[in-house]
Each structure stands twice: as structure tokens, then as C-alpha cells.
Image 1: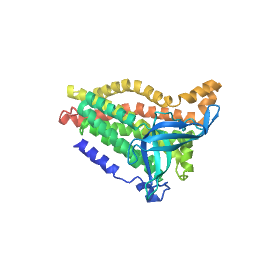
Image 2: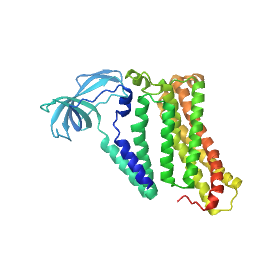
Image 3: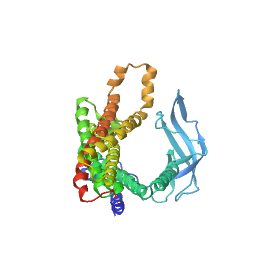
Image 4: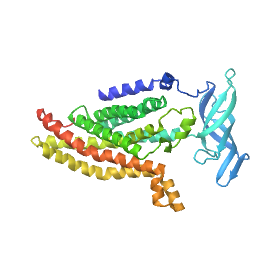
Length: 381
């Protein structure tokens, strides 16, 4: 029943128009022309005569001859343009045989193609295979629990795409909005995977305690360190796109506890499930002894989870750290740079949430299992 409910909620979210939040506040949005379509194409030839090389950077125009593989214009050959901006992170160079995503502009009356732009390499087929392999492995290993985990994964992705991000753009309070979204995700994910029982209740209460503490710490230390949300990639681009009213700092702080909420749920559920099993095997166990068992499990889980967060966050900044090392930048300077300080805040505050959720869940679990569990054994099924 919970899986069906999650599926229905996901379907309802998918029906929400993408501009619903923006339209409610008159937010700017660049409309997509009605006479355009995007197609998968194969690169047949390239013309690099218009490409200018400046050291390692390329600018200019690359001409691309492509054959359309899908859609109304299948099998047609068109000349597309690939504009190079001199930014290695955004530019792409095509070669014969590549698969390309091409945007076609056609005449609204005759349907004749009047312009073609090579947007990027076509990767959807590879991404589809990766998703399929992920789902198959998850279901094969975890069975019905894995299928429910997949439902929760899809629900979380749709909720973020259809509610959280549009609400941010619409100017809603980022911290409050993110907290409400995390609350919904916590209830749906834990109850869906763990079951609607005492184990799920303890997991939800413990996880929400950890998320709330993480949010409070992120707000306090973010203000104390005087960090601005513009340190995040593409933040200024968002402002220049007509969203100068956005509170980037609040969005940055919201991202801190949003990013750590998954790990917080994981620890909360681990401790809740372990304590439920201990209570099932030892129905006569006392409150202090049960809490002690939860603390023992929490210490073991936290020992590896904190390092996991460090590696996850620092992995995205490997090249930045290499630049500092190559330039011989003093450690004092590095630690005071705003974008480095932002990552330190992100990592440590997220870790604080993990450390605090363990004892909170253990205490909550001890109270719930010894009082409510005494009315009947709860194996979390």
C-alpha cells in the first residue's frame, strides 16, 4: 500500500506544470519556441576551419554535418553549428561517428528545417543503460525491499525537480522549503523501506532530530563565518538570468542539511533496525541496556560515515586542491578562502548531524521500544 501511495504521489508530481511556481509570482522564464525539436543524430563530417586555437582554449565555430536518427526528420542530413565559447568546461568538439544532440528550428508552416545547433554529445542511451543496470542489481540483491527503495529514489528525484527547485526560483524561503521537503522525504523513504511500524517510527524521529540539529548548526555557523551563497557554481549566472531577488546564502545553507539528510536517514534507520532486532531477541531488556546497544551500533556506523562524507565532498574539489598545491599557496590562505571555508562548513556541519543523530535515535528508540514495544513484539515487518 505504501509503495502504491508513493507511486501515486510521484505521478501527481509529474503532472504539475514546470512553470506553476514561477507563474504564481511572475518569475522570469525564457519560453521554448514552439517551432523547435531536439533529435539524436550521428556526426558524418566536421569542418574545423572556423575553430581558433589560443593555447589550450578553442573558440569560434565548428561546422558539423549530421544525419538525424530519430523523429519526423529521420535519415535527413543537415548542417549544424557548434559554437565554442573558450570555456573547456562547457565547450565540446565533435568528431565523425559521434552521437550528438541537435536542436532543429523549422518553419512553422512548411516544416522545413531552417537552422540546426549541435547542443552536446548524446548520452541519454548510456544513462538509460546505467539506470537499468542499477535497478536490476538493486532488485536482485534486495528483492521487494530494493524495489521499494527504487520507488523512494524516484519519488525523491521528482520531488526535488518539481517542487524544491521551482519553489527556490519562485522566491520561497529556502531554509523552510528545504526542511519541509526533507521532512516529506524522510517520512516517505523510511516508512516505505522500513515499514509502517515502531522501527520506522524510531527511524523517522531520529532522522528528523538529526536534520533539525544540522539545519540549526548550518544557520548559526554560516552566519558566523560570513559566507555568501555566491560561492556555489553558477550562482551568479542565476542572478544574471533575472533572479536577483534570490537569497543565495539561504539556498546555500539549505543545501547543507539537504545534502546530509540522506546519510542522516541511513544512520537513523540502521540504529532503529538494530535496536528493534535486539528488542525482538531480548523482550525483557531494560531501557539503559537497549540504549547502550543503540549507542554501540551508532559508534560503529559513524566511524565510517564521517569519512564517507569527507571523501564525497572533497572529491568534487580535487582540481582546486591541486591548483593550490601547484601554486604553493599557504595553508592559512587556503583555509580562509570563501569557497574552501564553504566546503569545510558543508563537511563538518553535515558530520555534526551524523554524530548527533546516533545518540538521539538511541534514546528515542529506547523509550519507544521499552514502552510501546512491551505491548507486543515488533520485528520491523
